[in-house]
Amino acid sequence: MLDSKSYDQIKAFRDAELPRARSTIHDLNSLHDQIIKETILAAVDFFMHKAGPPPSPFCFFVMGSAGRQEQGTWSDQDHGIIYENGGENEYFLGLGEEISEGLFQTGYKRCEGKVMANNPLWCKSHEDWQAQITQWGRESSWATIRHLLTFIDCRPLYGEGSILKSLKGDTYEWIHRETLLPRLLQNTLHIKKGIGIMGQLLTETHGPYSGMLNLKDTGLFPYVNAARLLAIRHFIMDTGTRGRLEKLPNSVISPGERSIFAQNFSHLLSLRLAYGVQRDYDSGHYLQVENLSRQEKRQLKEALRNGLTLHETARKLVEREDLHGHE
Image (cartoon, rainbow, N blue to C red; front, side, top):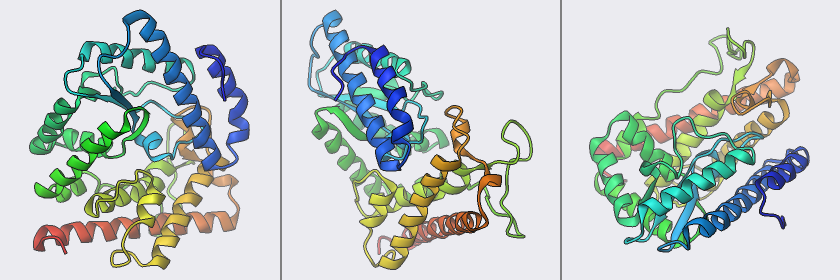
C-alpha cells in the first residue's frame, strides 16, 4: 500500500508499477483502482484541511471503462459524486475539483466531455440525482440518453456506496416502468465495421492511425453496449461486461454462447494491451494489426463477428419486448 499523500509520489508509484501491471487486464485495473483510491484519499485530506469535513455522507463513483474495470494502459477521468439530501453542493463541487486535479496530476487525462465530479451535472444530492435521471429519460435526446447510459456503468470507489446503490436500483426500476429500453437501444445501434465484405480487417485509411484498427469502436463497444442493455433488462447490477454476461439467464444466452462471448471480449482487451499503440489515451485504442500473426488475426475476426452477434441478440430482445411486453 502507498503511505504517501503526495500527488507527485503517487504518480511516481504509478509510473513504476505500470509496466508490471500491464501483463493482465486484472492486474492493470487493480493498479488503476489503487492509484485512484490513493489519489482520492490525498484529495479529501487536502480539501478537508481547507474547507472542513464533509457536510453529509457522500459517495465518489467512477464510470466509463473505470466503472466497468476495463481500462487500458491509459485512461481518462469519468466520475461523479452523490451525497445525502441536505448536503452542500458548493462543498462537494470543490471536493470534486480537487479530486479531478489530483487525478490529472497522477496521470489521468480530464474527460473532454466534462463527465467529472467538478461539473454540477455529475455532482448532486440523492434527491437531485433522482430528478435529473427522470429528466434525462423524459427528454430522451441523444445527449441525455447517453448521459443515462454513462451513469449505468457507475461503481462506488470511496464513501457511502449504499447511497449510489439505492439510486441505481431506483434507476433500473424507473427505466422499466417508463419502457425506456428501446430508446436506450437506439442510442447504441451505430457500430463501426471492423471486417469488410471480403473478410478483410478494416483499418483506418488516413490520419495518424492509418493502417490501424480502432479496437474500441469496432470490437469493444458491441460487447459493452449489448451487455449493458441486457443487464438493465434483467436487473443485473454488475458493471463489468464479463460479469453482466455471466449473470444472464440461460433463456437469453446459452451457457456455451455466454462463455464464448466472455472469452472473446477478454481476448480483445488482451490484444489491446499487447498490440495497442500506447503512446497516450487516444492511441491506446488502436491496434497495429500488421504485428499480429495469422492465427491472431483469425481470432480477432472471430471476436469481432461474435460481438456483432451479441449486439444483434440484444437488439432483437429489446425490440421484441417493445412490441409484445416483457417476456
